[in-house]
Length: 357
Ligand code: NAD
Ligand code: IPM
Ligand code: MN
Image 1 (tube, rainbow, N blue to C red):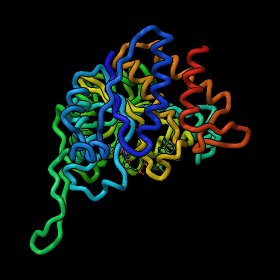
Image 2: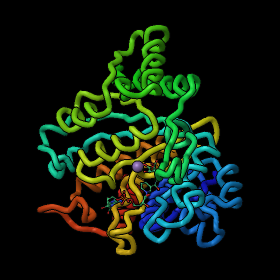
Image 3: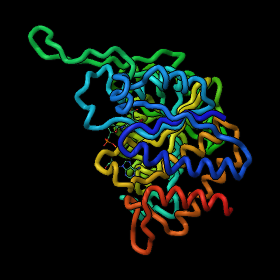
Image 4: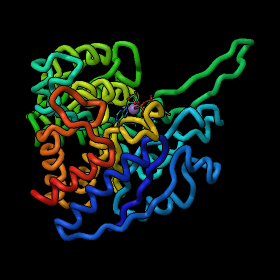
């Protein structure tokens, strides 16, 4: 099976290297072959091709069974033309592969709950899935960069959704809820935004017509941000648009102690893309201390959703649990009585736990 690897920038190459060790261990244990094609996306691709999503990367990704991504971006490219920023490369690959559905599962592990910024008893029941629309909304509406309009510097971004875009992502959320705890919370800003009012209307209609067995509630995004801290255990599936999903998933991620833990799957009708939810972490890049867990768990999602290797997916997740149970931690989650390890050691430990299970 062909995997396009896009390590990207900052800590990206470090966390992807650690993850490939785990993927290789899984392939060995479960008897399948993985063929990797390393390509450039983001800042590194700007340096090489003056294009954050060059043609060779496009070809590789389109031909692959799945794509694994580290992260893109960094201060080096913060002042390049907006049309070729590293982040633009990520948005383009999402659009190119039609990845409208971004799944961001967040389950607080009993081995890290005590490192949450919240009291452990507040977070220990947290098991939610953010279903984030990924190829529409304000990220993809018309952007007008700052320019003088009637003598005043002005900039704008259009927040646009179509009914079919809302329906297909809502369907993913309802279907996910069916095999979870049967509850969808749709998050919007319908008290202010026209886009949100249409979103809420469509989601409400669909629940009544197609998913009467699913419990649906609606929250304004500001309230949702507060509820995530107050009582995260109330959430099962959280359905939301592109920008709210981005913000809420960083907030949710840290309930379990570190943003470095959260994986994601970006799915459409063809090749899927898998990446941790965090960024390139320029502040710790090159030090070998980044937590690769979110990327390793993204590889588990890749096995599950793109390669149909369910046993391998389960085994990767179990191996991560075992390494945490045994007390190994990268510095972001280090605490009393733990053994501190670096990025590559964490990858080696998970690979070893997988092979020994
Ligand atoms: P970030 O997620 O890179 O970092 C936020 C904080 O979390 C930092 O203190 C960082 O050290 C820490 N952190 C992140 N991942 C970690 C890990 N695996 N282990 C330990 N600590 C970790 O967010 P930022 O600093 O706002 O953005 C940095 C760059 O990354 C920007 O250029 C941004 O556009 C880009 N970015 C890319 C992606 C992506 O490629 N999917 C996602 C988010 C941000
Ligand atoms: C993420 C990132 C991206 C996003 C950026 C880098 C374009 O923050 O994947 O969460 O906003 O979608
Ligand atoms: Mn983000």
